[in-house]
Length: 322
Image (tube, rainbow, N blue to C red; front, side, top):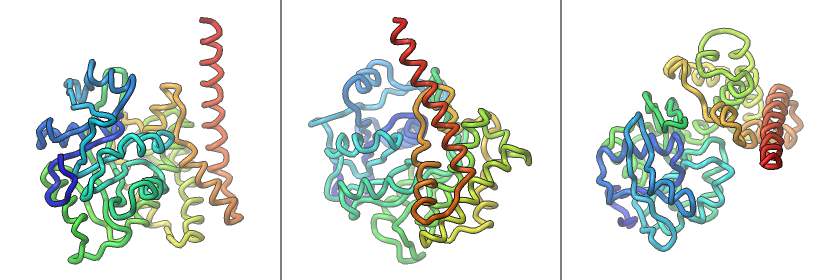
């Protein structure tokens, strides 16, 4: 483990859910186990060490490290849920060295700011995962399409990329993960945010995998209406999305498996808390900030929060019965 710059040869990852497991599994096909660290402590670390994880039916035993055992890595990847990010930032601090590049594959548009507040912008690049169909179940994670990882500085000029962008591009190419470097990463993040706001929330409310959103119909109409509210708000934030961005985002849908499920639907089906706060919650907050109505997202947010409240009541009733 190095974390001192140069070619990326070591990776630390926080968050071994569907996305993290899929990407680290792909990386492990090129990098040896001693170059990898899964950052975890407590019961989660014990479980990973005992049972490993399963990716496409195959058991993988990633090295699990925490606390003082962590070593600086060349690349640190955050793939946790947003409500776990603050704890994950503190937990992974030992994996950050002088030359470590840090990326976040979390949904939403705020995780990089939180990570940079802890580690400094000199270590953090913007990034997102787009088009991956990783799904987690009781039997492990399955993935058939790895999609693309757009990444970079806030602004990226072809032919004049920063050294750390070039380092990360070389790494992604070497481990056979498709990536791209948008000229405007903030716009790219907002496009993904817009897609998540529409697709994830609608899928969670309707209770259907991607197939319901791939064809014209009521579910797709709801998703597009929610996305239009993001487009409207973006102009107040200096991003300026447009109808062409909705069309571009929805063009990703046919590339996904019709049976694939977004993370929010997976959470609803597992009766877990969702990330609605960083989707509809962010839209509502921006709407209040700028005095812009967001009725579609308001309704989606309320329905999902009602589902979460029901799950919490069920847990309490179960505990009382025990």
